[in-house]
Length: 503
Image (cartoon, rainbow, N blue to C red; front, side, top):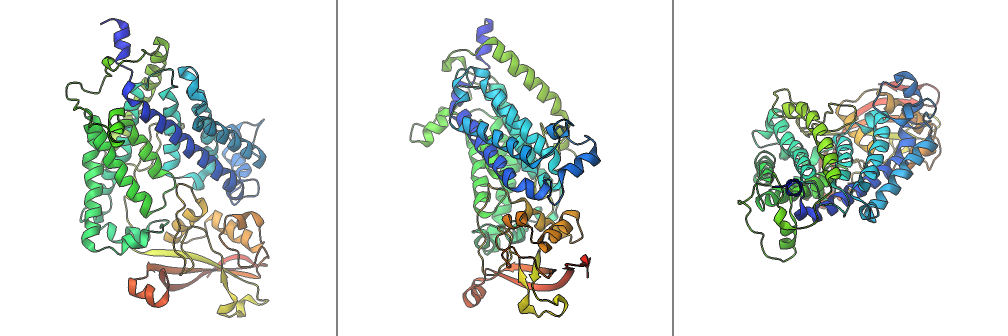
């Protein structure tokens, strides 16, 4: 074989549909991530936010992750943050429109890498409000999918394989963290409570929770079967790899329907697409079932598929970047098989080749922190009718309100309220939230579902603690309530003069 034939083996001409789905899908998620940051970051972490970024930058002295906000000549401002988000959204829209894909093979790389760099700048100063596994997933995906190239080159097989390696870390890592963690995953009882206690239930979560026990056992078995078993099919020849990826996608769609996990499930679906070949997509559209590929192992491409061989320079670039990522893969690989496996961990400052996983420990009961305010002149003597709750868009509050579907949009404040309910305490961001509510801050109002005082400052605030559970079918018929709850008391009070205090 001459060198052209060897290069042809690195081209994956039968993954063009996968490339389109992955690149445009990751671009769409990026647009959503920048849009949510544009709206929420100034309120949560801006100049006058709950945890102001300028103060953090002064304390950290540039020791955080890479960020253009660390540059002294640049610094942080809400205006600059919004410009960064606007540029990120514009670049994402350009990919959705297919503009970079029309240029030479390399033109998709700078577009995705600029989006990656801009979001990394945000993530590096986002702290607790950006401490989620799907943030690192978006960064890793954003770095990788630009390497799939434009329409002028075939999808690089090495990049598709690296995306499969990412899928393996996502799914097998999640399966192993479950088996090593909470015993409820081993005795098949994990899903008895999960739909009710998950961070942000969706509109069908109650229906899923009220299924019989045998159904919940099947949910756990199905999760183990896919994450510990079927995931390995993506390393086999086609169409077996496509079947394995399809099983992953089906389980992820079930999670989409029964919960709100921002863009976690959608990114996993996109990454799984890297294992689905064009013939399999055509079969799904009504064509013939693809031929079994035992005659060729998909470590290398198939030059008989035809198409122009991609340029030597393009292949050298891909080889160099993949070699760099392969070096970074050693610690994540060890982590997968470690008895001290880390969940949602990054091993470098650039959030490339990360460790993933979720729900290594399960919560059996749902607790909620409810903030209430009053405009009674004497809050200490106010009766119960004078207290009114501040409602959040995603987290449970009003007992009659059915949970809504927000994912893939990420409600960062609502998520932190769930974590707070697990371990109530005077966390800095929560103390600042109470102070903002006490002052009638208009920025915080934009992140709430309802403000009972329509922007006016309350005369007093109190924080109540409840245990929530789903209403049974009979309870819902008689009361009309979606939730039932038990009052566990007041854990903090705030008045305009004394600030915050714990009871």
